[in-house]
Length: 393
Image (cartoon, rainbow, N blue to C red):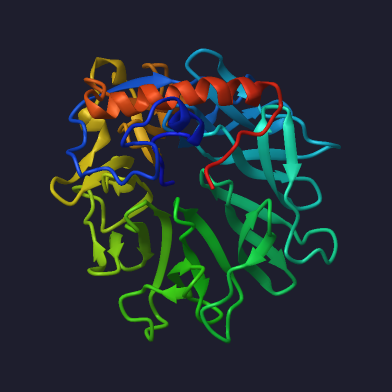
């Protein structure tokens, strides 16, 4: 998910260059990371996974519990907390994304999947569907920006449609790529309100799309007429740089309107398989590579290429295998899924983990962060009281 540096509230307190949407200059990614085990919500399965992180370092994801999968929010001060506020019984909940105001989106399953927005851990809201035709025609919320715009997918009788939701407009369809369109999904949105995802071009193949309010949905596959190719756009930053992957077409990709879709390679012994899940405003992409030793998380930049995150861990990562990196913020903090058996045969921890750059960011990024945290202190107080934060408009 793309990020901004500060809140409008903070701009009233201290005028700085980071008081608006900021496109960060490209910088090298860190060459060493400290690993933090985020724990679980409890239960015999002892399993959790992190899905996204905001600029304050707040993490969201899900944890397996005796009552099923439950969405969580994690902070350094409070640790992992379950997200509640859901009316009635349900099977599971998942948090998929968080913005810098602490608003979280995901899905809750009861008689179907339904897109949810949390303004605080116990203030949950069902965002509805595009096709309220009856039980089972549900929805999933997959990303949110700091303007409170939410994207995802909504099911209907023949498949699904990508949507964008806001408080002012409610849920709206993003359209289709062609006349034969059974499934599409919006996966990422930036601060400009530009959206990426995938849409079917026939009954069996999907193409990555890029959507703007002015131009609608555009096919960004290298050859849109080739319906044998399958591609999926996962994330977009404030530079309109897109990360995704091409099923059966080797590597994850990096896309810009000027350069088109470019493969970013894979890890050694990765068997021509890499999947990209997020991109920050430095153009750093994180994801998963499949190697002879199992899944390994990677980080990539245009200048430095792809590196195995397991090769960049300090001593805190001893015994761990970081398998999939799901999110990265502009400070270079990465959330991922990792495993560690601590030398115990038959017992493996499967955990949400946080990778923190060593040394941590300094200079202007820390100045912006300091200003951001002033706003976060107010926003977090309101968030814990159950009051929605005020987004930049």
